[in-house]
Image (cartoon, rainbow, N blue to C red; front, side):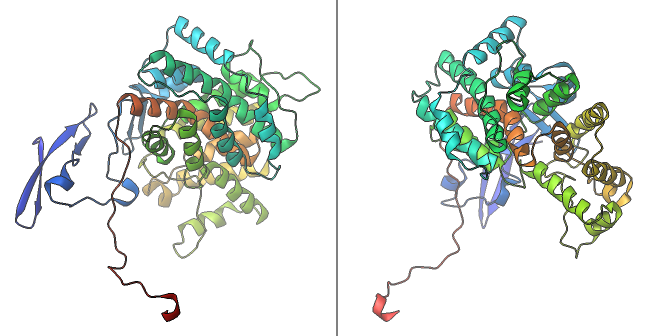
Amino acid sequence: MSDIAKLQIGENSYEFPLIKGTENEVAIDVKTLRNATNGVITIDPGYKNTGSCVSGITFLDGEKGILRYRGYSIEELAEKADFLEVAYLLIFGNLPTSEQLEKFHSDIKSNSVVDDDVKKIVDAFPKTAHPMGVLSSLTSALTAFNPSSVDVDSEEDMYNSVVKIMGKFPVLVAWTMRKKQGLPLNYGSKNLGYVENIMKMMFEQPNEDYVINPIIKNALDKLLILHADHEQNCSTSTVRIAGSSHVGLFASLSTGISALWGPLHGGANQAVLEMLEAIRQDGGDTKKYMAKAKDKSDPFRLMGFGHRVYKNFDPRAKIIKKAAEEVLNDLGINDPILEIAKGLSEEALSDPYFVDRKLYPNVDFYSGIIYRAMGIPVEMFTVMFALGRLPGWIAQWKEMRTNKEPIGRPRQIYNGENLRSFIPLDKR
């Protein structure tokens, strides 16, 4: 393959270099296109064919169903690592030694107390407020309580910012849920692991000790790992482009939370459960809804199947499907919603229409099932996604700032009115 791409515009020919990644991905470097061609740009709505950066964090091959963090397969990480190890890997580039992991966890725990005035902000929200709106607001509010800017050229400053948000974010997640449920806002324990602390803060009742269920803990650990990063998706790109203006980490994370909220992104697992509930209320006939999904004239959309990037089985779904089965078997849950979910999954995996189109159940389908089984309210599903995605957002923000990437400023093609003369109000 040549290392140059040629572009012909009218009688003029232009050459642009090709960039090749370590996994043989190829891109045409068009950063000089507009200057070289006197104003010509590319247009790519949805950025389906446009690379916004060069990144060393996550590799994704949707055609082959491959997902790797820093070179490690998602299958091996989900099996052998815990969430905190994966967070360290994503943010700092390598798996931690036992000493590094112990210090990382210790420093996070030292930063896990939130200014008490934040509780006043939580109290100001009505119980009807969506948890994602609350979480976005609280994350942004942390900036007011931690006003010093981060010196991105200082490893110490960067590290301190990382452990600060890793410590405080789970508290905000737990408080968001407990506010919704009318429970007291609590803290974790320094004697527990990172994920165990999350569970304690979320589920502990004020009149009893919380006992960790190891199967649920293992499933939650896996869910958080599987959601930890996913290349340049909508929310991650939002974090990077917001951070490119040199806004702080907390504010950048808040923009990512808002982007994640949408039903086409992080809100998909909530949409799955809402779909399942609608099917239940209509009698629970899964065959009827599978037929509706195949009918192009029917507006019904089967949520939780297929993926924008994966044209094969979502590798994360394979892992979490097994965890979902373990959780349901351990808890012995008899839930008609979950039975409908299992029915849809089994039918889709055997129906030629879905198999031929590679419309397999994705990670959003199974994660919603697990969260429901754990007793997490549907409105909190996307918040749990944000909790898992936190280290990926941090890693992407950190990479963008340390690489000194320019401020994001996409171009456009204008198709509005040409120059018009102003008409006075009395003559319109």
